[in-house]
Amino acid sequence: MFPSMRVIVFASQKGGSGKTTLSGHIAVEAERQGAGPVALIDTDPQGSLAKWWNVRKDPTPAFIQSVFSNLFYDLDTARDEGFRLVVIDTPPAVTRAISEVVSFADIVVAPTRPSPHDLRAVAPTVDIAEARGKPLVFVVNGATQNARITSEAAIALSQHGTVAPTTVHHRVDFAASMIDGRTVMEIDPFCKSALEITALWEYLYDRLQRADGAYRGGADGIDAMAQANKRVFGRRAVS
Ligand SMILES: Nc1ncnc2c1ncn2[C@@H]1O[C@H](COP(=O)(O)OP(=O)(O)OP(=O)(O)O)[C@@H](O)[C@H]1O
Ligand SMILES: [Mg+2]
Image (cartoon, rainbow, N blue to C red; front, top):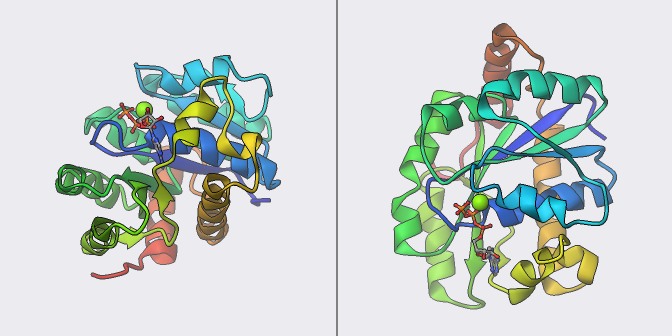
């Protein structure tokens, strides 16, 4: 369990890269692995994560109804209510509002498909994370087994920052499981897709353990944390 509330922000300018899929899966996995209570926030006007949660039977992870302008207060309330992790999904854009969401992050996760279009679109997300002094992790998502472009994508991404050691492959169960508000782990916790999510969570958990708590409330707290994050997370696979 984290000593204080942690915030993961899923962000990438590219539409369809897997932000919503991985937000839901990582939140559920974190709860399953005992890092909760976990809450989800959907800042995307498309509301895909909210719709998924609405058809979900299990009330955990919790869902916090929020909007960009209230995020500061809603995170404060979440911390007061004892949440240990908040996972925030964002729309596919690069705007000032998304940059502000990133300012609350302990870690920013950018799912990226191994395609030239996705790879060309990473720069603005990197810029936002850097401007806010936040650690950024790329996750290669939707990869095809044994395809050369997957390793090439990881190498290309490593020029921009840290790449998660776990690749999430393209499998229909990611989409299928979410139809009725579940995740691949809740269909079969030992299927290949579930094992990838478990491995990805373990990696993120380890990174978050070493952060010393970004969300303290107040602009000073955020700035102080940005500095702390730089200290803790300042590593790059290739700089
Ligand atoms: N690893 C995967 N394997 C198979 N399908 C996937 C995978 N990841 C995502 N998808 C599917 O790809 C589509 C886009 O994924 P998702 O909605 O998570 O992306 P997004 O980044 O949130 O999109 P947007 O930018 O529009 O919000 C969805 O239909 C989802 O089910
Ligand atoms: Mg989405």
